[in-house]
Image 1: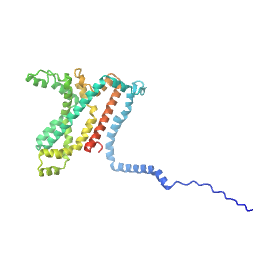
Image 2: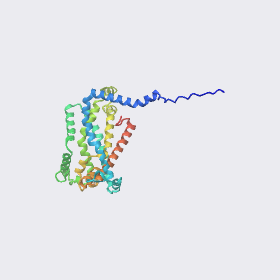
Image 3: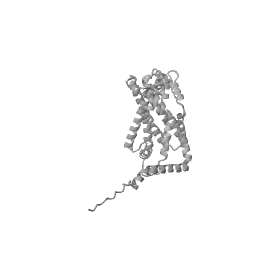
Image 4: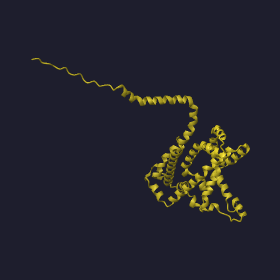
Amino acid sequence: MEITTRRPSPPARATEPPVRSRRLRNAPARYWRSRWTEAQRSWRLYWQLYLLVIVPVAYFVIFKYIPISNAVIAFKDYNVVEGIWGSEWVGFKNFELFFSNPVFATLLKNTFILAFYLVLASFPIPIILAIALNEIRNGWFKSSVQLLTYAPYFISTVVAVSMTILILSPRLGIVNDALGLFGIPAVDFLGDPNYFRHIYVWSDVWQTTGYSAVIYMAALAGIDPALHEAAKIDGASRWQRIRNVDLPGIMPTAVIILVLGVGNMMAIGFEKAYLLQNDLNLAQSEIIPTYVYKTGLVNADFSMATAVGLFNSVINLCLLLFVNFAAKRITGKGLWG
């Protein structure tokens, strides 16, 4: 009887991973090495520009982004002794107290109305001024108008408010002196709440119109003169050239400025509102920024003030995103292209 023996099978050898899987595993490392090489080459070529950018970037990081971490105060019962991170966590209690406060509706209404009025008045007037100046051919007159409209921008808010108070004073103001010539009794403009919004908005328009018009004039200067020449050859009038050449040419700039203006609606100037504010016009002059100042610094309720300020910032962000989305859908232009 023949006996057969089997050879023992050799131990299984570990199969090496395919080349493709190794390449996929090393792809991130190669990607970041290539990016690092590109960054080094870019630094060697444009190091002067990077040095110029360092200062503004450091400013935003130090004074804008790092302080964002302190917004956690809005969710705590802040105690100066215990510090920001040692204070008791209260969640949304500060927001609930603010929303249930009887002044919440008044603050929101006053802020929205004043901000919307300001955007509505300050947006078209610089465009009209820029187009009018662009059509003037007399260099001396054009320069004089630019100087007179641009100069108020350099006046500080405190000085501008002081001038406004003196001009509208019931006893010494020029406006009431002029009204007295027509037999009209003196009007206490700053003591009547109904005049506060008009005073705030139109004094701001007076200050910023010339500066904003410069931006639109720069956009008008970038329009190809051949378009105007072609319109003249076709027999277009001056108004038709403005409507069909100038306005479409500055539309991208106007859309961006409008989006930024609406995005900053809730961040309207605290200084001017607070300086023009008094006990008589408080019904319409009390807005969210002035309330935050009084709550946080005057009453030392830092948690509530931070909660109100954070709520204000969130509303600003939502308005910015919504208006940018609407502008993108309507005009095809937005903040991000």
